[in-house]
Length: 335
Image (cartoon, rainbow, N blue to C red; front, side, top):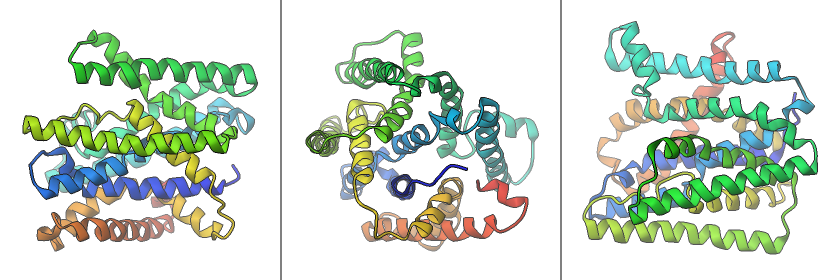
């Protein structure tokens, strides 16, 4: 197996908690001129790097998979890791929500992502897994890595700059072009995750990136806040994961965690928590709706609840995942 890298484990844990922060502050997506929306938007902007970081971790871990195993093994490992849990938890949630089983209805809802909204991430990551073997040979030498940088620049020009500008200034990009750019835009994170994991970024460059990352949060908040207040509705031009603001934010989080010294950390515990990330992603939203929202229906709008509740939900999800991991066969549903 692959040797564990401490900062990758930390990124995994941090991104997992960030995802829960986003889901505890979903009010950011429903405009209302009140403190609830304003405070939720703060969390939305600060923790927006969660999904990009998951993709960057995949790139860092997998783009050079050929050093360890062949492509057949790569697909077998990846697809069983994603497909079985995704189908299982979607099915279980479907039964709970709809109380009866209609296989055709389940399949159509599953494929359209209507059962668990946050599982939109799975088709995306599976698509990225299909592209990784095509790009993987480029990791083998400097020339190949330069090509990877070229791909990053092309995606950035079209997806991270052109599309957000088209949203802000209201010009249209032909649908076929924008759909193609849309799906492939996420590849920027997979490639950047790999490139940043193998290169050393100088301290001066890192500081510049951190400053841009912090500015990205401020610009996104300020723009969304002012435009939404003016229009009296949510203006989500900068809610795109692949916009330049989001890319810089994710890169700054990745580099800052990579460059912290984790010597004093208990690596075994970090590894255990990191191994629960996928399981927590799969089940936390169900726990939030069934347990948390039932016990604390009145607290959901409360700021303290949204902060402390995030950590409680994370810990409870981790405990459940660790228990499931101990059960033979069933442990396949929390990879």
